[in-house]
View 1: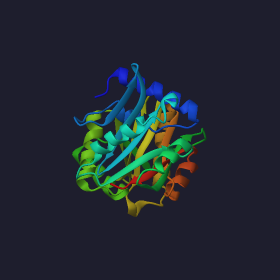
View 2 (view 1 turned 45 degrees about the horizontal axis):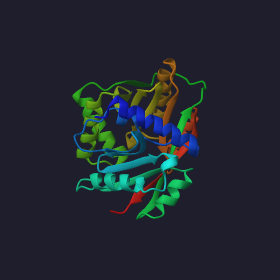
View 3 (view 1 turned 180 degrees about the horizontal axis):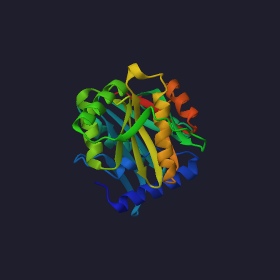
View 4 (view 1 turned 90 degrees about the horizontal axis):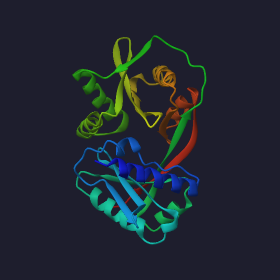
Length: 275
């Protein structure tokens, strides 16, 4: 579990790096604040008691994403190489099938560094922010918090069908999310039946939407747009700016989010590391 001091140091270094580079780093602060595993997931490098290098590993089932940074004044000294070696070593076990290295699309420094690694470009991910627009209530779709054992099983099934996780991976990931206590699992219903789900995180004065999916046979019927509109209206009433993420290859999801008022403001590239 990270201390408040460590979280503050990470945030301070992030702000320095982002100001210098003109991009956003994806450091998953909701996960950093809720670390529960005993294994080593975060790596630090200090110079004269100042944090100048950080690397975090983030597990999602059989996949690990890795993202890090080094203070502009301390680059080209091998700091990130050492941090990455530690992160890769910690991530190299039999259960991990995929290691993805994450870098802001606009970061030329990251692109140059990645050229020297055994990795290939995989996907891009857009960060989107909601811009105020009129949304309409529709009583044919409802949302509520996940509460029962039946809801839990529906969440697991939707993770498997929507994101390609195995059942065991889906159970482990959702257990970690539940144990952290930071996010809310939302059940989407239509005609009295569970039809989809999403996860909402209110943290650091922002609302983030994750893991949004509808059962495959029910897609294309407007259910997703109605459910997303309800969640956006709910979070907007709290006065929070609202964000979400979507993979660039998912054109249908991108169009859905845009129709609800979300606009892309940043993107991240992911590179598949060859173990």
